[in-house]
Length: 384
Image 1: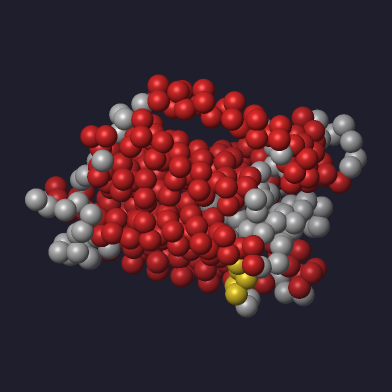
Image 2 (image 1 turned 135 degrees about the vertical axis):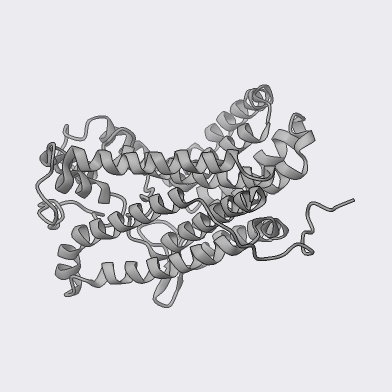
């Protein structure tokens, strides 16, 4: 009988045509993202670093490396990846735990600093969770309706990641990976009734834990309550805590229908904090207006739709779940980031894929895109 785990006898690399529309959408978003990042960052880059090209040159370098990683990943037989699913999961967990050995940045221990390079292991953990879940859900597809193999197993696997992230603290990463895990469980065949049963037991336990550890929770997550207050009415106070949201909304409002023109943003001139990171979409709204913002949202929507289309047409269940997880990650990140910028939800600290500054995050995201292309390539290869 063929072992679904050990696929070393299969070819590691596969050729064939991949999904061109998906690639075009990715490159379009990447191109718009790089141009927007340059416009958003050059003022602060010049003011603080004396070089208006500092951030964009580094991001472009990572983009080139990311595209190379994407093309390389698209050639790999994606079924070969399942052999490393547990290793990827365990490795990402160790890296996240290792963050405690490095100095805190912005009040959190989420980063590993290696000389000039710093990265968040949680970016790797997102893909590791997707890969492991896809592997297990494919291998044990006939057991997904059971409580232990189909529900509790995945809750425990997610919980091990969540505990490390919560204490960093990295609440946004915890929630994002949680949403990805839940979506994959529902797509993979977990019974909703089993989730309800678990919730009936777990929720009271969590409430008890909150009661016992109330002082610690208040100290560790005091910023959460503050963010909720500022989110409900950012213009009710002039405190610095709501300043970022106020300036973001001012940028969006000043853009109007067609925007103030590319490169003409006023908020990027040291008015809007994190303009090159989590709030870069505000500059899209200000410079390109409602029309430009809608174009970006439409491109993300088309990318997500095309991703799920690839998932539904994958040659096997593992590839389908793998693509569904990656597509869900991209869609959730884009939705949550845009929702934060427009004040639909409180500030979470989630970046906008292809737009926000962050080299390693961009490279990892593009490598994941390569996996999606690999799945589409092999589906087309078998049809041919």
